[in-house]
Image 1 (cartoon, rainbow, N blue to C red):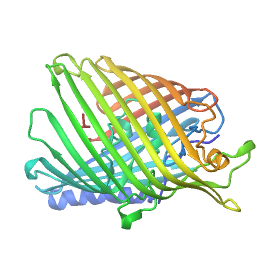
Image 2: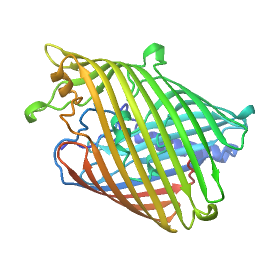
Image 3: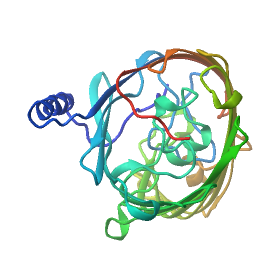
Image 4: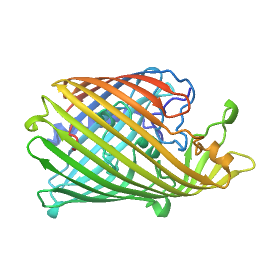
Length: 407
């Protein structure tokens, strides 16, 4: 069975995390520097009725896409250090820690600085960060309302877009919330690749509008666009006849994603501690144009490729008691991919064979406090040809201070 690879890229020794915590303590003693330090603990249990390799027909999977492990395993553990640097700058460092192939590994997720108090509502961020496209993408996984990402995030982004770059945003001085932003990105990580155009291979744009309706309701609508020049984006490949595949499907060309997101929140008189309801939905469409090579094949197998893929999800989460919530989510994907060689497209996972991926999920969770949560989730996953009943149990615990999450 193919399991989810939690992290990719260079592995950072775990001792580095310990050193950073020690260095922060020394700085506090000598200079009065007092950073916020928190550790997110995430443990899981997974049970699946389908034992075949995971796939999303019509999509080349990459990044961290895939379902979780079977049985007991560590999830997405994080060490977070953040602080105001001075009256002008704020800094944040996040590293993810997990087990991979029976070894403890870490990956640098965030390392950025951000301006404070610039005039005219301007903010500039530089370093490695989660892109602000969509609604969920800039949130850490432990802040999600379900254990896993929606299918459209899994299929298009490899769960989430994280990249190195610069972001500039502006909040309008109006009663109606209006935020405009743009990002210039390196494009070295999935779903871009190759760091093309002199290390400026991707860019993003977003608009967010929101406001209040009375004292009990609030809303937000977002529009976003991301594009990249892709040079060598690799993905897993599905072997024919059950044999082991040695070729790697590799994409070269242009990739453009456009999305819209919507969130509505209700709580009686604005008091969400006792009771609340959140409804959210997102839709993304991706257009790609280029070629796909089966790297490792001899002679080289290749095809032209024009892809149009889309997906959406909608979910509702209801807090019916101060510590208890229930949630429902429905996901659906679709694609229309064409090329000069249908066999190569099939090997790359870009042929649907008439299957439309979808999934229905229900969850219930209990939070003893704002620092602890235990969640049970059940999904009927029709992502691939054989239906899969999935049972997931998760705990998420926060040690230390942790900043509030965005709307």
